[in-house]
Image (cartoon, rainbow, N blue to C red; front, side):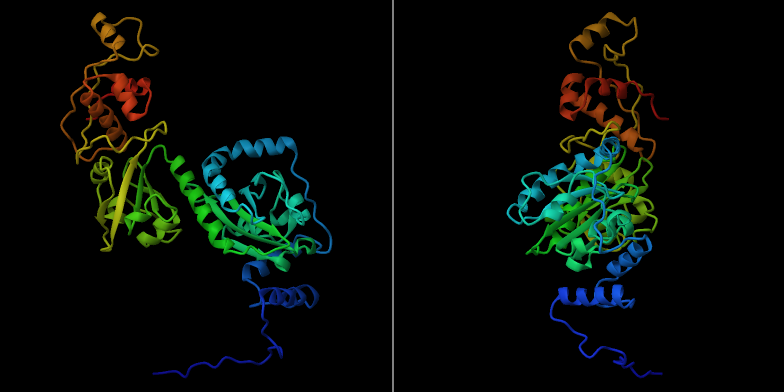
Length: 425
């Protein structure tokens, strides 16, 4: 049975509900919310309206100027120390973003998860940006509880990207400012930082939300990889040209084959909701661990068919337990085998007080006998695969520990420690 289409009612609409510019709509919204106590739905974003409500309930007085003093030096030092990993991951992208914005009079800000600024654009302050000059200092807290509605404040509160323009800010003193901000998350999906672009007394002149979103994604991708020192990191996309860009999908796979994290692009490509359990690589990608490990030896991306039928291009990065990237040039077989007990002599720093003279001579020359691999006994764990990689590289280098360490980009001590690990039954 068909139902008649609903007709939108115009009852209650003002005589002139439409305005030519966003600034005019925001001004009307501000008048309705603050002066008439009417919810201005449709005039500004719902995120701004909700932030106005929270700011008012927190006791902010919009006609006054909020405190823009930085946190104490002790608190700032502690904040910077806690966010060192974020700052390290963001450094390259911050430099590139600041170079791209030269001449735009935009300020680049990075805050921690609580809204405290931990990085701000270097260089001379622009004329006509007095309020921004004061607000954009390392240690200033931009959270709603301190300065009301701003883009970074909304992101800290909601975890969602936000843009706040002109009089959409809660305080009157910020009505000449424009800001666009995007979240940065870690491997556990927690908000760890906010990237923000701000300007005063002029428009952006470009799509600031898109720009800040791309760079925030790039920072997040670097952070996810930096925090995955015990994971296989999968790089994938439907188009191989997008690998290595902020538009690539990323996933972290644990030693037991569980997908422990996905970035936003990965969620979209694999059809997983942000709060949906990731599952195993078999469920998500239709692949076994041995197949992923085999991809570590490929110099270029390989086409993989997903259970959904979608073909994606994938590269796999293997990271050592102490965070060292293993080069893709080292060969892997389709089924890396567990390793028999190593018969090599430990590095001199870890060596026992007594050992055989022949072993002393071998170690002095940087050469040890390369142990043979035991027959495969099923799908290897990531730890077994890491050990197998060192053994295979050592065999390829004729037992030369120094050359093996250089090839893998690790210390000789790490090679010896892996060789001393017991065999896996």
